[in-house]
Amino acid sequence: MRGQHMEKISVIIPVYNDEKYLAQCLDSVLRQTYSNLEIILVDDGSTDSTPELCEKYREKYANIRILHKKNGGVGSSRNAGLEMATGEYILFVDHDDLLGETHIEELYKLLKKNDADIAVGNFNHFIEEKRAYGIWLKEDDYFEKTYTPEEWFTVEYETVPYNMSIIFAVPWAKLYKKSLFENIVYPINARVEDDLTTWKIYLLADKIAYMNKAIYTHRIFENSVSAQANKTAVFPLEAVEERISLLSQLGFDITTEIEAYHYRLNICIDTALKDGDYLKYRNAKQKLAILKKYKKI
Image (cartoon, rainbow, N blue to C red):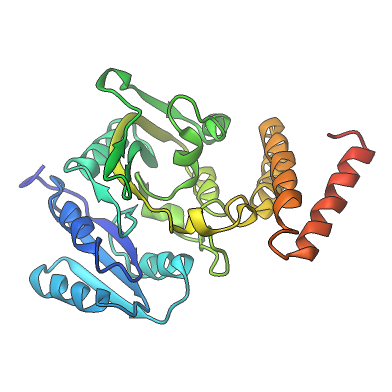
């Protein structure tokens, strides 16, 4: 799409202590066939050579902007990037992941073709310790589909065959109209911020367009946040509690949300006490007892 009139897209990359992989990530963004990009690096108080690497890229590329800030977590970095963004569209990239060369162009065309507010793609894994890709999509798996927000929530917990449950929650592999973020803020006190936030952005959209193609590569580490965090942090109860509260008011079918809530309550009971969080353990036991009393479980 080089040389054509293109709307500006703000690419927000929260960065923290990633001197090893950040250059690969940035190079994959800079190689995009969609060229009207504002690349925003939010350095979350890195203590390695990441700040210097960011500055080297800013000196070389005029479309890169940087914010160096006090450490506050990835949620605070996303919020800061959104405040800085001047594009008509928003796209998030994790600092150690990689974009396919046509990632942004394909999402933009998908969004425009369907007059959608959000365009979504699929992904593959790169397992760092094994230096190998985890690929589950083949070329003949390709399809496109549009959803209303209510329809999109029906695939929220699907895992087979397309890992839709992961796609639903994560902020990346998506192109959003910036207007959707007018009152959206990511929590700054949660280890896993996306499960608490992404679903609210869907509700503000009118149409969501999906392409079943792996256009994003998500790097997996044994020491990643999701691998290190206890299960009650990865699957927070409050995320489903908030969804049940709001979706029920909207008249959505919340059957699968209730099932997910029961699942997360049991995870909390199984792990909170082992993690030394006695109050969270008792709170989950209390809620489970109430559900059993009224035969809701």
